[in-house]
Length: 110
Image 1 (tube, helix red, strand yellow):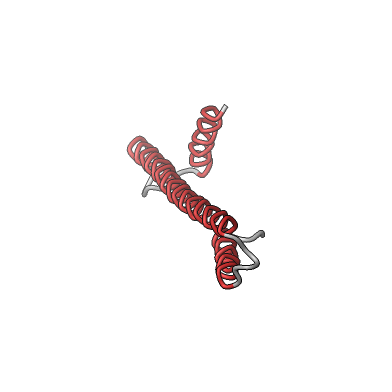
Image 2: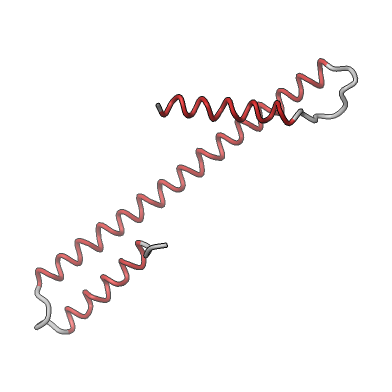
């Protein structure tokens, strides 16, 4: 795995600090460029964290929806069948529900 955004930002910060300590090596333009790069990396890191949070929220919502649909189907089976005890559901029915959700998402993507 490559370097993280945080690691690159820290390295750029170290380079920037050294340019300030040894001004003959660096110029104000170089320091300004490093500041800009660090700023962009921090923005990118925030976008990445926001994306990951939204992705997790979407996954939770999707799994919750699937769970509710499975429970609903289990209730229907339990209600319709006199000899069915408890809220167990056939695994193939659960797989069918999940596959329908996957197919719907793939259709939206295309």
